[in-house]
Amino acid sequence: MASPIRIEPSHLLLVDDNAESVIVLESLLQSFKLRLLKASSFKEALTLYKEHPVSLIIINCDDLSGNMELIEKMTVAKEGDLAPVILLVHDNGEELSLQEGVQVLYKPFESNILKEKVRAFLDLTREVSCLRSEVANLQVQSQELQNFASIAVHDLKSPLGIIQGYADMMLMDEGLSEDNINFLNVIHKATVGMNSLVEALLRFTRLDQMKMSFKQVDLNEVLKRVMQELTEEADDFLTNIEVEELPEVEADADYMLVILKHLLTNALKFRRNDVPLQVKVKGRVLSEQRDMIVPHMDPICIVEVQDNGIGFEMEERELIFEAFHRLHPKSDYPGDGLGLATCRRIAARFGGTVTATSQLGKGSSFFLTLPVCQGQKKA
Image (cartoon, rainbow, N blue to C red; front, side, top):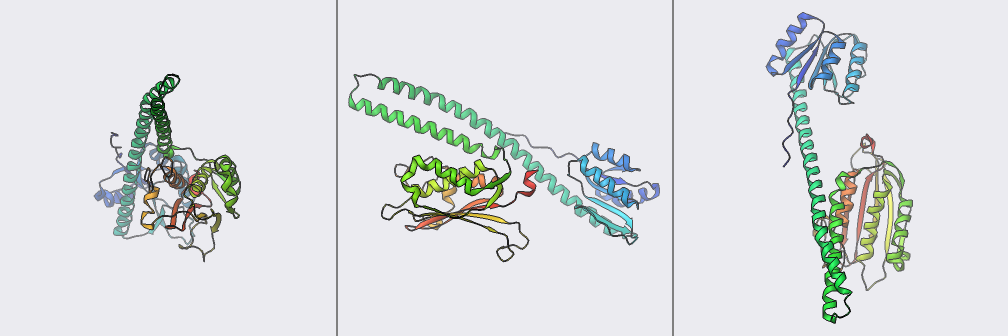
């Protein structure tokens, strides 16, 4: 079990070259019981900021250009992760252009206003620190699970290989009865299926660790690749697939292929026998204000795979996205039970999701939703 990540004690960095005002500010801030770092110059402040975990920076200096330069250097020093900053300056009428996380308090000010700002920033910083600690713990636990999965797969595959090998050797014996041959074929088929399932499970557990590549992806080209790969498996049904123009998104073409192939395979697999198969693939981008549910939201791409298959009850909609959950016997619809769970997990890594609507006996629609641009995820 992973040991908890310890949150380091944080400091408040006070930048002020006036000894008297340092004393005043120090007395105002003593109730917060933080470790106080004091710097009388910008150079000293930058050095202290690099060497210590700092929860809050208070800069008491009217040199605005110097303040901005210091903040910029601090941002670079922590690779863009700047601690909250409170600037204490006189209002000279100059309009300030401040980056996120920097607030101005004009002098003179009421002491309780400074305390309220400090308290708010510190509460926020503590919450962020706790969240980062939890994320770090989850990453450690995830890696431990990855290691366990790899070992478990190796330990499972080894005896499966031995069983399959012996079964194959025994099948070479020409003196076997028909019953014995049938028994051995059952063993062979079971070990092959189990081996395939173990491999699929390992791939599924590694999805959260996958390396993502962000490039402009034409989903039309991706769909062409999917159709080519499905030619050998379901060539007779590909003419029943109607495709409309699909958008471009910033994503990874290989992983988009995995999702679209699973969704199309799903439509082909769960077709009805009493009507000709009909599958439609279409996409659109929600970007105009009238389309968006939330104002100022970034553009979203939606790809829909619609079929006239057997469908399912809507109360089972979330269950079909769970790993290994089946609505039908495996003997009727073969597969490893990980297809839709894989689709949703991959989509989540790209800031999207996969959902569905359906009507039993009339068909289903699966929706892949992705941001058109990844933005900060590329960092």
